[in-house]
Image 1 (cartoon, rainbow, N blue to C red):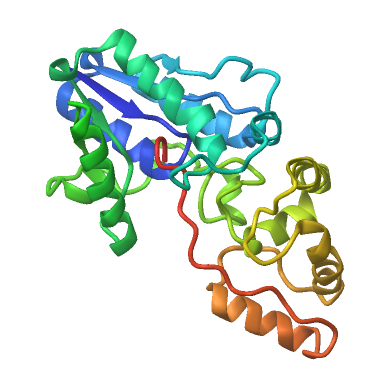
Image 2 (cartoon, rainbow, N blue to C red; image 1 turned 90 degrees about the horizontal axis):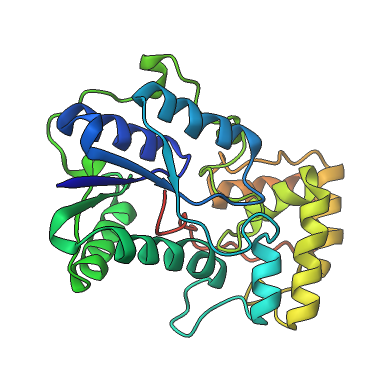
Length: 273
């Protein structure tokens, strides 16, 4: 039996990898990752340090062209942000499809278990149910150590001398910078700190002819975000969304602009975090 850990570069997936190796032995564990062009360099550092600690290689299940195409190139080529069922297309093309192809080519359903780093919070348990159903319909077993295992051996990677990705200082998740699933609070950080990625996202909206959001384009958010930046609104996801936008209105004296509609909480990519 092979134990396949979706090793995303996030903290929860690292804890998952450590728990699975400690329970089943490193000789039975495979760390699977997708190399993403606009992944933060410190996330790459983190996932390699975890692999080195476990004395395991990282097995990459990459889409063709992953070394030259970022998420914006992918959606521009497809001329869409979403696939038919509403899933963000970059997740499907860059992660889900290559991962399922890797499983089909390398592992019989009855001979492996796939592990995800979802935790026991409310929306994460919904993800556990959804992922279990999807993978189960294809014949694959799944498990979720952080959410479901009663006996845990580690709560924080610092316990083994590894520092989590610096990206967590600003973002809730260690996803791609410029995540196409993220809300406007995430994109305010991108506007403030990653101007080149902001321009790439605007290019994608212009070429596809659709916006990332239901109610506005990035180009229309620019003057609002610039006013927020000038008003010293902190670029962070570590302020609850409702409070963040309330504080932004107060900082801008509420009269300069109508601020963006608050987004529902965004979730990390299904296949790896």
